[in-house]
Amino acid sequence: LKVTTTLDWDKQQLAEKAVSEGAEKNLRYNAENAALTAIDPKTGQILAMVGSKNYFDTKIDGQVNVTVRDRQPGSSFKPYVYLAAFTKGYVPETILYDVPTNFSTEDGKKYEPQNYDGTFHGPVSLMQALGGSLNVPAVKLLYLVDVKKSIELAKNLGITTLNEPDRYGLSLVLGGGEVKLLDHVNAYATLATGGVRRDKTAILKIENAKGELQEEYKDTPGERVVAEKFVAMLDSVLSNNANRSWIFGENNPLRFDNRPVVAKTGTTNEYR
Image 1 (tube, rainbow, N blue to C red):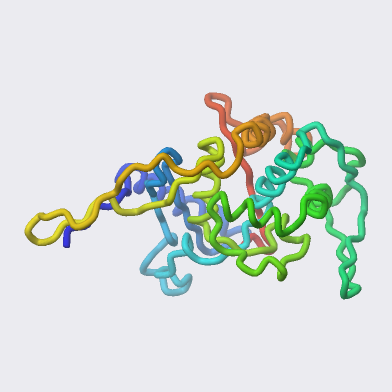
Image 2 (image 1 turned 90 degrees about the horizontal axis):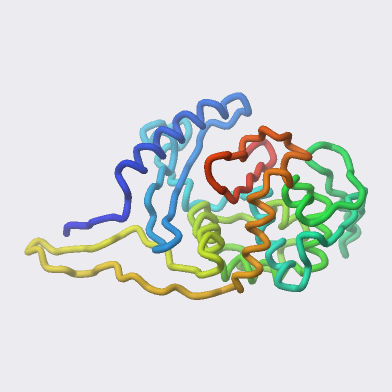
């Protein structure tokens, strides 16, 4: 068979370079490996996929394709919960209180999330809370919106894991549930189209030995899974550097002056 993939050779080479250099920088956090994938939101085609920094390095399990393995997304899961809140009538200006809070569970366990910067900021708007990636308001928002509703929206956007909604508590919004990087990128691609999901694909066509077409990619209009106005609210929050700079500084790594960029980071325990 002759298989033609969707990979863009130039982008694939750039992706491999980015992973190699990024993994090198992350050594100081005791992180040994890295992975990257990029999708064209208009088609769902996978343009670049790097599963590990070195396929032949057995010390880091280099032959494991990390882009399709379950991993905790950290705070990069937060946009799904905020989007779910926007669909329920919350707006970027809605105020929540960032104060020490005990979200005790039915089994009597105390759950008191802390913020990234180790402090509390009092009344904050949703746009400040998401831009500054504050944990306490995010957990409150998930409580208000409902865990199952948030998972349902994430799955509509493109997440295929999180299949036992009863198992997840409020730490879900901080990345406590595992997702596949490829799904996560596909779900973000759904946000990039304003709420239209397309199935991800890695193959353009398959031909047999005689050159006869066995299978071919066909463009589809996709499926609208969330109203565009709610995604626009999320875009406005995550593309405005002012929403980040009050916590991360004016010249944070997500600041881009030459183009509009909607961006969110996510860090897990021990930088996993």
